[in-house]
Length: 93
Image (tube, rainbow, N blue to C red; front, side):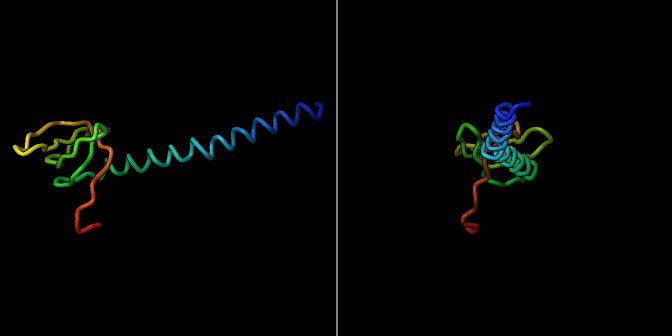
């Protein structure tokens, strides 16, 4: 193998390592945190869906959560993956 071929292999490995540490690893960490958040959902928590809707959790099931929205407390089922975040209560802030 000549030097030019070795340098191109080293360059490709270095490029992949940079790509992994800048993009892939942080995305996996974020997904893991979201999975943990979604598995720890509890009744009464205020959540935001991926569509931006604020609601309170009325019921938690295996793959679904039932959310209460609006002044009439309308109940709507959502898949757990649709929960983007849990809002902090005033005393937690």
